[in-house]
Image (cartoon, rainbow over all chains, first blue to last red; front, side):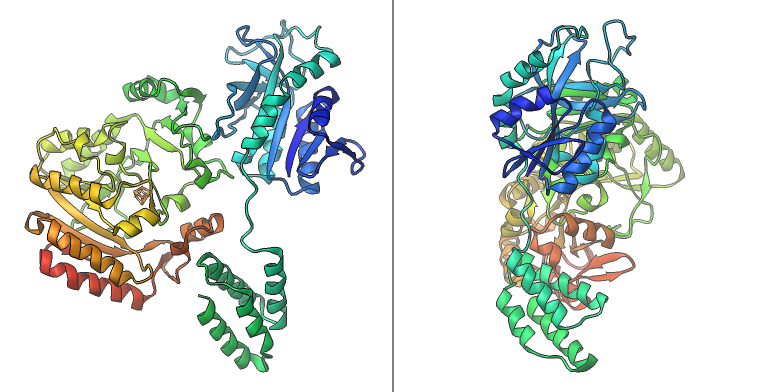
Length: 269
Length: 329
Ligand code: SF4
């Protein structure tokens, strides 16, 4: 499942509609929506809330990717309002820490560097010369997300909403901006890294656990057996029937267990 | 679907003033340049996916202030040289061999190029004041493969040509001899090609040129008068290894001018045990990483009987071709 995080309901609404997401009753403080393969949480404004929302989403679902979608301001007038961007650098304005989202896949979007502020930035706010794109969530989102996922599975897509004059940025305006970028986002979602394929099928895992329990192994022996099984699987030798054969024997005492383990080792590795 | 390699260049603020940085940025003029304070903040990030990054490697331009010259490691053959050193002007490699320890040593597959190259040359120069130096320059990378991007091999060859006390080894799996083919052979530079059977190359030496192309480079280098070392290292205990390596050595026996080969080295798979565990926890797509290994003094390698059998077998095959003197095991 892919997890989307937006700050505002006006950012979420067009995505909920476009991806046909249903409200999930699971959380009290955050609005959560989902389908079979997509979940969306509305964090509220600010990096702490974004980090909490990421944590909730990651604890609730097995996520393959996390995407922060939202609006951002641009100090650069050459970036048109409505432009969608992939973020390649985030600076936290308060701590000065930098984060570097991976951009391995070509999403067909422009890119930019973003600074996350703790307060609203306007035309009058004094800014460092290198500040270009501005938001209030990305650093918190990214830092929290990187506790749960590898960096190539964390993505930040922003849509330019203003050039630091926020008067016109109403809910309807934001919803309109995101709506016009739904196709871009749909494309991005299809290009995200696939979920990692597990080495063992659920049935194989059940059999493995049954075998390990059957022999009443010490934790070191268990670790060893699991390592052999993993090796055997990678080498394409592993079959469940092999395990079943071993599970038929009933070890009597330590030396019998040792002999069976040796035999198992020779068959697996 | 992946962005092309070096689509992004992370540029350390300190590195920007060096000519090498400027020329590399010019070479990849379409790359997005991202300013960074310190390369380690990008390169050493936790939770990078090394194998995913191999699909779209980025370039990191940085400066290296210390450890410009390392004493040789126990895991590398020193070819009888007491003063054995290596340096790392580039971290990581454009190839992606399954058995490469770099996957375990680094968190990132991105290439770091240290652009303060003069400092590396000065470090060797000052060591030469004390004693002769045997230097491997293509250590945590494959420099000749990268020569078209960044011509460091040519610079070292020129440097060595006026310093007889320096011996430079350039180890490669590339077929890029043409990148330095315009230079005159220098007697204290050894061009070392790692060769493996084509089946092994194809399966486990991902992105490297086929054996045939490497052999053509070897032949050209020998014909031009270079000292050429052939490295059968690592020999892998693949299924039917003696047949696979037997056919391979037989084809080389007929093909290579053995009398003109400077020397030959042989070794079997080995790797720092911690690196191997890290690699195994990240990837389950390469059977050779899962071969039975023994762990001794922190090094994972084939159990003694396997290692000894392979080494004895390889020695038997190679000794008639190069003699014992030129065979390093
Ligand atoms: S050529 Fe050498 S450095 Fe490059 S990936 Fe292969 S083993 Fe590693």
